[in-house]
Length: 117
Image 1 (cartoon, rainbow, N blue to C red):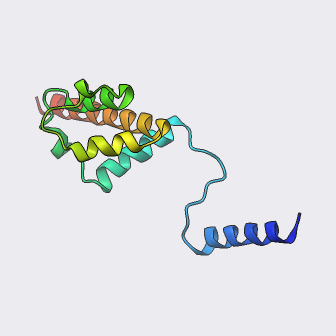
Image 2: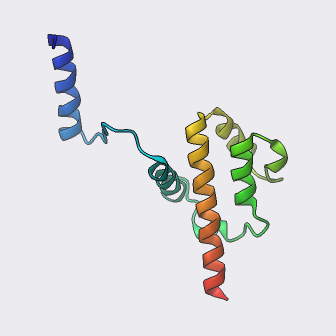
């Protein structure tokens, strides 16, 4: 191994151990990506069940369909166009992770409603 590569690897290892950097040597699988996205929706963007409970016309599924297909007919009326733009800018894997997380949010919403009945 040449010296530059060794130094770079040592730096990465040092940063991971001491620098609080979350470094994975392997790529996350689909369920991990969806779970990470759902966690971000809840903890970073504040999209909790309390917010989702108002989506009684399956808007979460519509956004998931929009994200999967790119068909604007699925995008719910009155929803923020900035979010729509952000979805278009994501790569395909990120889009699918978002769609999966939105479907999970709809499942959570439906389960919450059923528990309250």
